[in-house]
Image 1 (cartoon, rainbow, N blue to C red):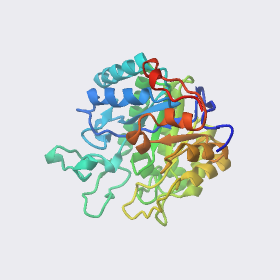
Image 2 (cartoon, rainbow, N blue to C red):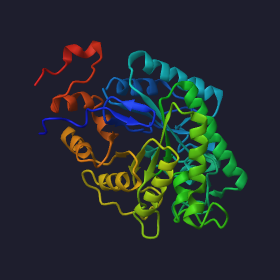
Image 3 (tube, helix red, strand yellow):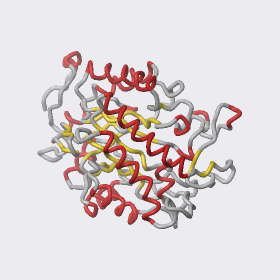
Length: 361
């Protein structure tokens, strides 16, 4: 075990300094009602807020009603939704000083779906769903109905909706915003040739396919203001020949870095049912390392990172700047406290829990 731990050193992401390199990844709970948070969100986020992590990110939050993945997904597209999230943010702030982020998203053709535990299939408009929008009328799967191809008016509305949601996030007091441009959702759909068959200014060449995602980033950064760290989640590859790949991701990273993007959260896949992903411990870390080096931007590593030494090694070796954990926090909301003990570092414990604090090594 190393004598010093990189995982528990501070890191600066744009205007935001985190006390350590562990971020609670945004995790959809599929439990909202009409886009509004419920008591589950208070309990779920409250437990993670006292975990000792360096940053807590709220789940994918739709910027428009039709942008929700499922009817149970959060939204931030009205005064009522802002008020609902205000209650959650205030509750978290009352018990913890942890920095807070929110992931803003639009699901595109993957919207109007059932929750994973209900099969995840599309819901027809007559059965409680709605018509999904996408760059092109290409279905996610051959057995699904095609989405409606977006008009230029639809595209302008989406850009404005992201900006308005970012303004609401700023008013709510979030420290960071992550834009979801991965996992086959709308902005990723525009980037990938597998989902984008447009022949206008938003399709075809790489410049055209990047146009909407970059316009969204610019609009969000302006609305958020200089005090909020704006980052982006990217899929490094579609894992399908002829799709989005690591070279295009690096180019996107360079363009985002030039615009002042604070960090890139590097995942992969999600746009095609034909993907073949070679799962294994840390299977996406190499993407984060290469993008960090070639795009010269802070990156976050994700993907089957499950223990403290593994996470610390990734940071200490310069493969990524932060570690994002999701499933591990579902299994153990106090992973950070245990990791600090294992690596011989001190982190702030809630005073109510100090009696259970691990003894010094």
